[in-house]
Length: 70
Image 1 (spheres, rainbow, N blue to C red):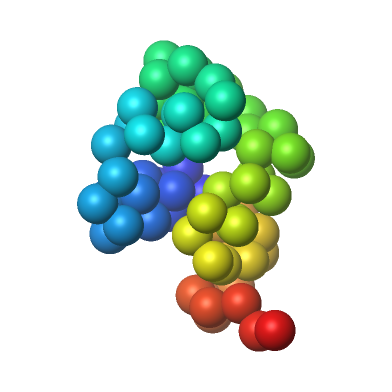
Image 2 (cartoon, rainbow, N blue to C red):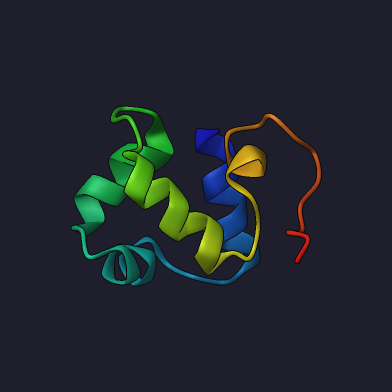
């Protein structure tokens, strides 16, 4: 899961600081999510899914399906 949020961020050409701002958290907190040093709270997980237009299952590595179905 942690590697997946890093890949999503890099593929979208965002910095950690930019994503942290969107999540209303510090860059250090966001970095800890990517490194697996900190569990990702449910509300942050949902925000990440919306930012990247994907599912929480994809972020959690429960699915290989990247795109959300509307």
